[in-house]
Image (tube, rainbow, N blue to C red):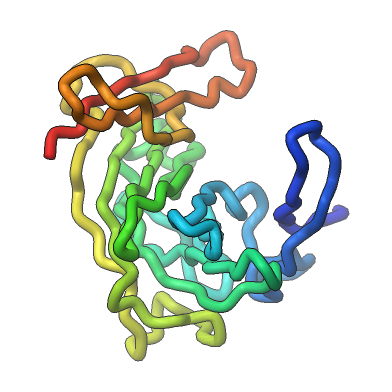
Length: 228
């Protein structure tokens, strides 16, 4: 099998290649159980307000950091990498701990996943983080929006085995919304973005589904009002 490393390319508005970022060795793909897991690599990205920093999140833990999220395993650590946009090099990584998979798959050995599908910088070292959980046998996804803060998080760029390592501080997280509470079908939400300012002056927030070009998945866009 041929493995392709994750990449971050800079493009112009016409879609032409301009530059690429340097990828840390610990999130590259390897033929052995080391580094990134297949289809669990870079999934979310967000600039800070100055565009000096780019933050890129893994969907799932790298092999070195332990098992993936499971129905009975809360706290699987993924990495959020901070890049200097001038040098294109990583200057830090921060651990972020996933919730457990929301629903047991049916049958028990069928596919199930929980991971970070997108992040959005909102200032003061804080992000909105989308966690997306899906289990075979349950039609809809469980989508949770967390407020994560890296202010006191350790730089783990040079640390390994985060599931066992006690000598670091991960990002804090606070649940803001579980979309299950909307009591409607929710599909594979993988995008989050500020929306327009509403007539009452409040900021809006947009979520969008990746339907994977699958006729059995729904294309959905959600618009929320953020009430200060």
